[in-house]
Length: 58
Image (tube, rainbow, N blue to C red):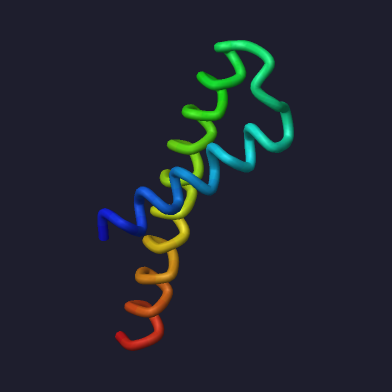
């Protein structure tokens, strides 16, 4: 579980840095925020999938 969260965060942060570069400390801060947003988005997607599965079964 922790590895999945770290991997998702890293993916979001690296994508952000790749798109905007790291020209300033603000870009690094934006990458951190984008990494956490990616974790939140992934959590929401998993929650939606679990809810859909539950509804399909019951």
